[in-house]
Length: 310
Image (cartoon, rainbow, N blue to C red; front, side, top):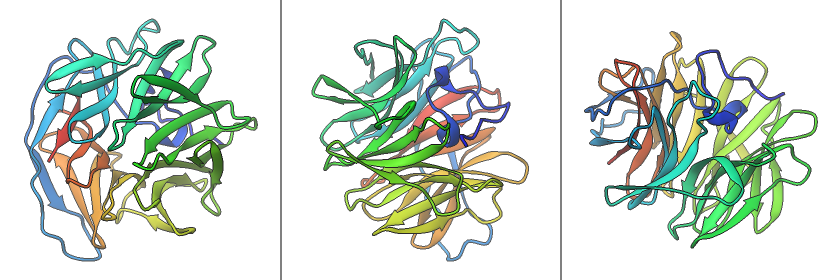
């Protein structure tokens, strides 16, 4: 079945359902914070800590901002002006050259941009005028809806430079599955033994990362050449693998035993925790070939910010 978010999780306008929900809270001001990087406990191999310079990406006047991806020039995500109001939907945006631009999608009353590839093609999720949740692509200003055949909900989460898309859909039985979309040909992605699967990222080689739920806990996965490999942060209560670059480095999110959210990078067989210093929670969504990372953090005042780091 679809995994309902915890009470402390807020779905932006109900667009991101199930395993791909990001936990967010309202914020009231803009902050740029330093980044603390520390090694994961019980990591399988040593890895030198890397310090990232992070800058906030906060849509002006918005109470919530999420950044999902960047091509090195343009960051994409979604914002909400007032998360307590049903009349304040999530809205997709781009951030480039210091300027913010709303993505106007035909027939959409809510939207989030979740990915951008090296060719500038943007993908995401939107709710149409009938409140159906659908995926989309935006290529050179050309908007195209994306719907998994027979699904009640479709979420496109990422696209690689070859145009291969991954995401999640919910079927008529309210079960969530991952998918790969290759030129309109859809392939199901279901982790063996799981009750729910979502695909979140894909690299140029076609390696796919995501998250599954087995009825007890959520764990990340890597799908490479038809073989699933678990991606589980040591001692974590849950793990989500969200993004993967061409070097095979994986960015994602884990929850510790105290229900605190942390970002992580998995590279060369080792995990590293990525936490914004003093933050109440950090979540990473992508790691690019250039080393740029994106995500969300909540500061000590419970203020939420999108971030891009390198």
